[in-house]
Length: 327
Image 1: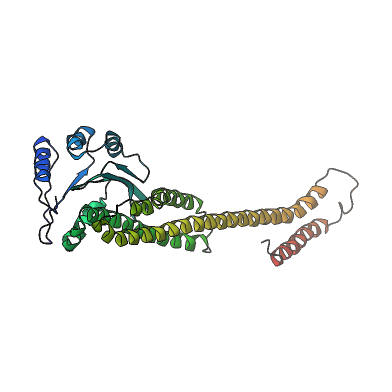
Image 2: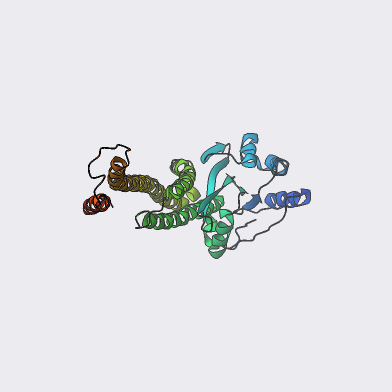
């Protein structure tokens, strides 16, 4: 819970049982002028969240969205309460995978409520930033909203850099001299980028609408440039994600072309060796026929001549195929 007192802030953390809920509500009611509270919840149940909903003026639909955590990024206003849903995202390098969570923020006149589902909570980083620079708390609850959004979007950018590095490594492997099919790895990374895109792209139109819906009071006007900066960072990340998706399509096309080239090379080699072995097979087949009157059957040099013919013809074919790049 944050209270603006001469540029300082105070934080209180507690589990959300009945007693803790009463403590939170009591502190919220007792805040003085120019002060606000911030309540952070992680994976709450519907019953736990409903304990605060009535007192904070949360709409039942907003509570349902916050509990079930299956929302696309969006912005809604319920009376004087602004509700913002967004997806949290981070990159797990050990698994080369993008993991996502979900966060719902409720911004009221005197409080901020954040409900998070997932492993990495951008609210924790936002709280660290606010503790490092408590002067921004003069902007009121909007300062917390900005800090959380800024932390989440920064995490998008960091994840995009790691995905780009993984794509660069994958490109090097695809265009290396080794004949290894990386199609499965490419599709796996495409799935991660698609998950990334599903988190970033729906949020892009939300932030400009959020900037336009903060109100016209003096405090909102002073914080607008900060939200525009977050929107700009998000736009750059969105462009990067689109670029990654297009590059992956190009890498996939290149991999499929290389696989096709390998298959053609294999077919040429098989055809070349089949042609080479066809010559001695034909000669042996002719002289293996059981006819009484055949040329050179009684000649003592017939057998060596037939073997020599097989070797010479096969050698000439092998040399021709090597010269044409078939072997």
